[in-house]
Length: 563
Figure (tube, rainbow, N blue to C red):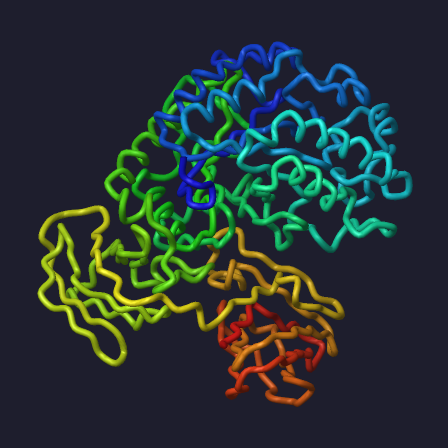
């Protein structure tokens, strides 16, 4: 089985009692009926036909109803778990098909409880005055809620951790991490650090991740979600060449429904919102950037288990068939360190091309999604200082291949029609380590002081200030004197932000020395704009400080540290 970190696509399945139904539209009435009806073997067979390499399946979500006979759940809230060990059956069936299993958990879903259960578990009566999904902090009992949750995670880990490849802890979404902080603890509402300790103590190799809104708490990776209201915007932008890529563990797409858990009737036509070509194009491009998982397709299942909405299995099987043609150049390859794809960019930003590295770094694969009209492909020099030689392509005639001081020039003409032209190069030399590092605005090494806020681009609206930014997100200061602090070690830095007509000026200091007064004002909204590049610092340890020079917004996209 391929390591989870090298997988290219998986399936996110929210299987939750209140939103599940039978094919005729009727619904199961009890948690036992819900669990007993699920066909774990048929479900695993279907996943195998779809070609997915891993799944994220719901261990519990709504009202914290774990899908196994839980002594902890019976102790705290009797009647909220089934007699059948559905999770165990699913894990065994899916793993038998060489498919990784990651279990989704939700450690802060007390808002779905009855008032009686809220009091029992420490969630408390009522809700937060501005958000019904948050507890009323005046009567929320942090210690009791976490006693309940951590007992549940301990039981869950003892039962399943050794058979899992990873686990997922959901968080509060776009309002994290600034809102609803509990004044007496280091974490909001949930002790995420202790959850990690429990899970990792039972299986240190577990990959840990969560939905990403600028913070991953103690998890290893984020999961970029595209859901609910964002989906129509996302897939309304039909040109997959404009869809941004992500460095997170996965970018979740929901092309089969309007939300994670909704399951429409089996009658009627497919509700697929994008073409197979668009989905494959994005899967491959995003795979050249992501650290792990890449694209995670999402769809709910019917109560019967292996019964999907019309179009789900058929579409995924088509994706599998197309990607099988790119086994060496994509499925078994890794993101290139010679020509890396920048997080937050799209295919258009990359001249409709991307690179992968394959077979023990012996080959470099150039994927060309659209040929230039003149047939001339210009490549810069590889960033890891290897050399390219012996280009081979089955679908293109290569008429010229030369190296200049600026990089490589290739001239081609089309030999046959193809979804994706792939040129394979031999890699010569020993790859050198990267000579730079991207430090994103959400990096924990950056300290913000003042009225900074987090801004993110979830769709592809041309007017969004975060469009094209590194991991399509920004931190913005609002008031004069708002500042950030970053200690770094390197020979130079580049500072990237965004522009807008309401943005102002910032003062940049290195090691306490004023270096520049920059403007982020522009009538045009732009993302990932280079505002400042330092002189050669000749290595050593340094401190970067940026101050808002007036009562207008300034923003940080990312800092590029050059060694």
